[in-house]
Amino acid sequence: MKLSDLQAQAKALAPVLRDFVSKAVSDLREEFKQMLDDRDQELRSIFSQIEVPALDDIAREASELIDKPADGKDADPEVIRQLVADAMAENPAPKDGADGEPGKDGQPGEKGEPGEQGPPGESVPVEEVQRMVDEAVARAMEQAEKPKDGEPGRDATDIDILPEIDPDKSYPRGTYATHAGGLWRSHATTHGMRGWECIVDGVKEIDITSVDDRTFKVNVQRSSGGAAGELFSMPIVIDRGVYRPDHGYEKGDGVSFGGSFWIAQDDDPAGKPGASDGWRLAVKHGRQGKQGEPGKNGKDGRPGRDGRDLTKMMPDGSKY
Figure (cartoon, helix red, strand yellow):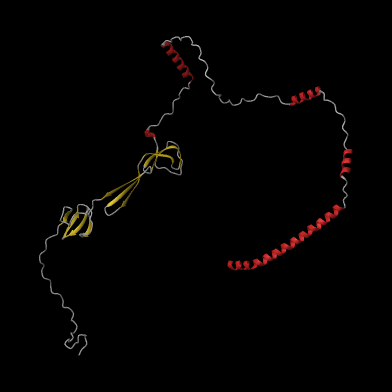
């Protein structure tokens, strides 16, 4: 059965199912309401049979169950003092707490009065100053950590240069390798091409494309990712056929004119070939050759059709 047939049947049965469910829910609601009414009627009948005593009687009976309080007496101060002492003894002995953070500096106070002028100082000889400086430097040198010799460096000839970088591998810092026509060095542990730097730029790729018949563009892709392009023209002669005055010519175009071959020396040369310096004669036409020997007679042709008598023909082609 197709999906469209199922959808049509479901659409036809929907009103019937909706009415059936609605009637079933309505009957169930009426039955449930009748059950609640019966339960309420039964509870009201039970409650009506219970005797409720008066509130005054309940209060009187409750007060008789409570013991009458006796007259109190003042507490003994010695007993209270002993209880407090025992409670304090159960507390753990306090420990010194950690120092708190230093507070913020207060506002500067008012400037005090100038003090009394002190006695004049004694002049210290230069030799004494030099001695004090030397002693201070010596004490500082004794406290300073003595430097250690570093590891010996490698000669340039000892550097290993890998033939090519594999982007799927990781290389340690200080590795040298060729890549894309250049020399690269890792300045950190590499991940793919991250961590490499090009220290000797080279040529990765050269692409030459044609612009027109004699102009080309050279695109150079550098190892480091840079690119440069340059246009250049080839000094070649291009045959443009028979000369036409309405055609534009460029330097190097060749045309035939007057039986000779001419080459344009400039772009848009003036005049016809031979009329200005813009054209150069490349191939001059040759002299006319001598008259050749008469050829042999050809074979006889096929016989023609019989002629018609036109003396008895009307202008419209009919005979009279």
